[in-house]
Amino acid sequence: RWEKIECVGMNSHNHAMFGSIDLWFYNAVAGLSLADSGFREILFTPGLFKKIDYARARLRTPCGTAAASWERNEKGLTADIRIPPGVKGSFRVPEGFAIDTILSTPADGKRERIPFTKSSVLSIGSGWYHIECVNNG
Image (tube, rainbow, N blue to C red; front, side, top):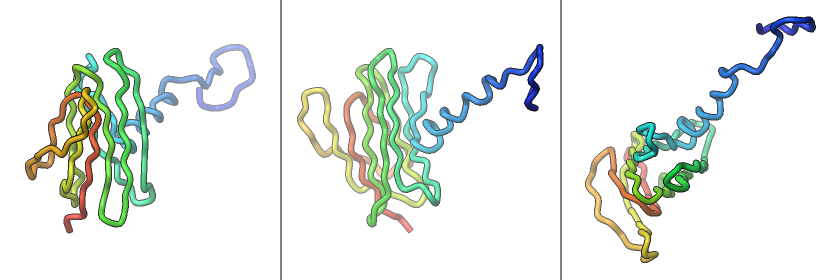
């Protein structure tokens, strides 16, 4: 029931539909979502809304912590992604942007610049990634 009724019977406002708003913040705003139910593939698609300039999210999975953050700046967009061990990841480049730089920090801790193609989806493995995108139009 939606109306406020103070009587015996069904008057609970604790419905599952109220719990889905947090999923929207993870998926649509922060851009962190799972590609399968086994937590073995994570998708990252920054949710660029006109009045939101940054977002950050963390998700504990059976494989470890997945994390994603993004922020607009004067050049374009920076994103930081953490993919747990044994998990595949994908970064979807937002429309109107192009990847400029990708820095990777794998398990050994040595930060390195990694090559990339001019694709709209970047496949990445376990580790930390810093991705810089520039405005493309």
